Image 1 (spheres, rainbow, N blue to C red):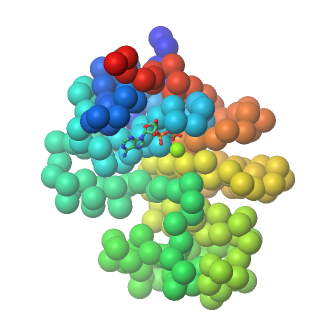
Image 2: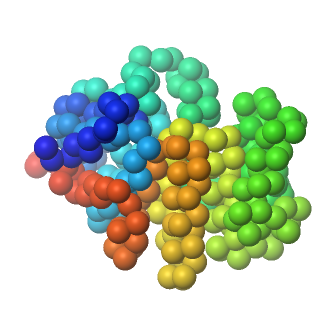
Length: 233
Ligand code: ADP
Ligand code: MG
């Protein structure tokens, strides 16, 4: 079935049925008849600029309540929760790696990476600190843990954003074009790192990418443009 990424044991990280979403007055629309993604899958999300990739991520993160249809994430009807509950759910279960890194100038590398744990109230624990230290080590930026973003290269900043997205051990990792603007070698290194960490955490990975040479490293590829378009006026 189109758009159905089947699971062997029945656990689904994402289940979408008859989804229809549009941005109010804007003409863009996203209509997904059915999409299921098995837990533990590594999925590349592709499609031209403006085809709705980030829009899909917002829906999955519980940030876009104005849609028709059904969206279940990690087995939960997240939109039946209150906004505050969704916010806490997102913090606990989702690791988001944004396109533009979204680092804070006044926090050091380690402080950025431990921020989600801080919001979850366990940043002072030995375990949380050890996890962050291990991630920074594996990302090759441990020696920069006290540095600030302005002194880092693009590739190093991207690694900080990846560590921050993974340090609280999310079950679902959403990476929005994490290798854009990086040279091909760094792109491959960073993609490999994200996939390795997803495997280590037994997490589901959805990664938006424009680099078709990386697609063979994923279990599935979803082209969002099959479901999106402009409303006729
Ligand atoms: P992609 O991530 O694939 O580049 P987006 O999901 O960001 O695409 O955007 C899909 C379409 O929706 C684009 O035409 C974009 O201009 C439009 N869009 C995105 N965000 C908004 C918004 N907040 N309000 C209105 N239109 C939006
Ligand atoms: Mg986008």
